[in-house]
Length: 245
Image (tube, rainbow, N blue to C red; front, side, top):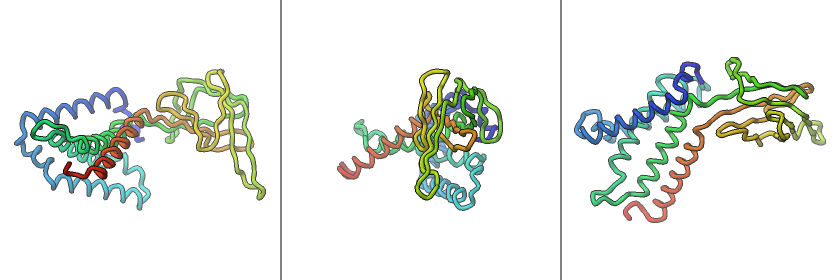
């Protein structure tokens, strides 16, 4: 994540998210005839926001320019789409008779949560790496741009091993670590250790002299997971009962 965006890390990102939601909610409720509100609730806004996001994602995928995901234009596209979805949700989650449209609410609120977790939570997401030799202890790690960060705990490498297949290629990696000189924990490739809320330790690689661990912090990922579950639940209800019931 670009260092500029880390300025908006918790709690500033949460405060901005609340101000954004309250501000647009107030504008929609108190001034429904406002030109901006009317445009954001129009089909043109829905089509344009989805098209812009799809174009941006395709550009990232085909060009390989992942830095574009942290650029101001892409951030504005995401904010635009979220605002459209949010206002549509406010307008349509209840029928005229006051009944809640559960399928509509689950799908749109789930999409909003999934988008919002990635957008508002990205300043809190960090990837770091640390190389440890056997019996070495550290409480520091390096971010992907080379900055040194302090960890809230100490890591110690107790032991590690590599198994090879019959053709001599490595087939299994395992490392045993200790956190804050406590109980030992085994980590294998693709099986990280969840050290605390939203933070995992992965075994990235093993050399003859050291192990490289990747520390991934994603505290907002549970909101994204909740959004995806809501999306699936709403889509399932829509498939089973149909759109008009």
